Amino acid sequence: MKKTSFIKSGDKELAIHGDYLRFKDDESIKDIVINKITSISVENINDQYSKLIWAALGFFTSIISWYLLEESIFSTIISILSLIGAVVFFISYFLLSLYRKFTIKTARIDIFLEFSSLDNHKILEFKKTLLERMNSYNSK
Image (cartoon, rainbow, N blue to C red; front, top):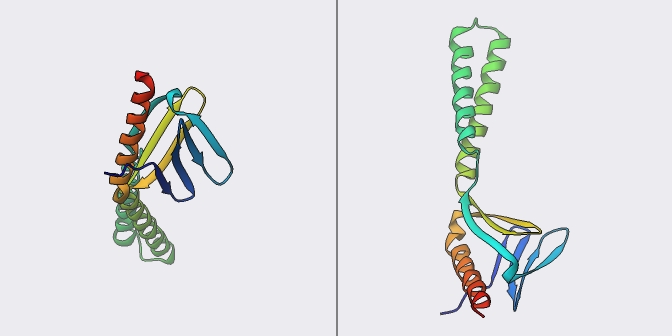
């Protein structure tokens, strides 16, 4: 079975080259010695539920300004803007809930790579390969 030693997400790349983990983004290329890595984690992106709260607040404000205020151009504008804001936050909640964060920590730098849950298998295979490589260096 072929082991995953390279992943790419957007403009960021992670690759295992011998004893080094190479991280490349728009601005720089960083090489990290594999046995200097302190932790590796895959987690959900934080604060995604606040988007859902803002969406509910926007919908609630839209309903209040549409039905309970006097029929004027001002209440109509408030209602439309609240509805648009609610839709934006509601859509962003569902888009962000599909993304996860891959974190590699060292004493010197932390590397964050955001990826879609569709790429979850590839990221977990890369994590497994990296952990095997770390364990082989630590056992020597």
